[in-house]
Length: 196
Image (cartoon, rainbow, N blue to C red):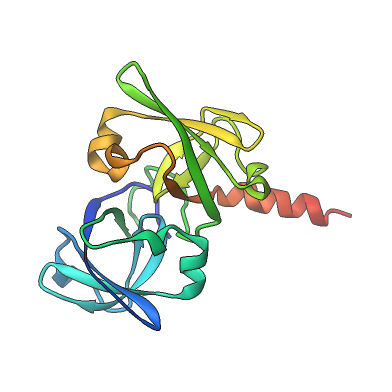
């Protein structure tokens, strides 16, 4: 489990496709504090550490994950949002995030709103019902509050700190963003579907 509070910006140092996609990711984490088999959220996707270097870790990404996320578009040098797994007793500053991406949202507009940037997205129609004003979403692993919803289009505001502490300062219109809807919204919808 994660919180959606990004704790590092990693850089893809090497990709290797022989079966599953293998990615080596440079980071500023203390590598000695990462165990093989640990989960790290990479641009919103929970991935398992399979190798450790001096200042990097490696993960393997299955074809299923590539088909549901933006990770197939990774390239050497790309910067990504990172978050280590939540430990018992850690502060829950964002919201409960599983790292199980539900689909891709497209950035359809970006405009300045005071010091913040207002970003609007188009969500897949089957996920739009899980997105509510003042609810939470995880976008590329970042916990964000939804400001507005109109059909499958929703908007968030990015404060300057978010754009500096994450990769959001690099995002542009047309980008495909990993979207994880709020877990509670998903369960409420399921309960309504199965109500007698």
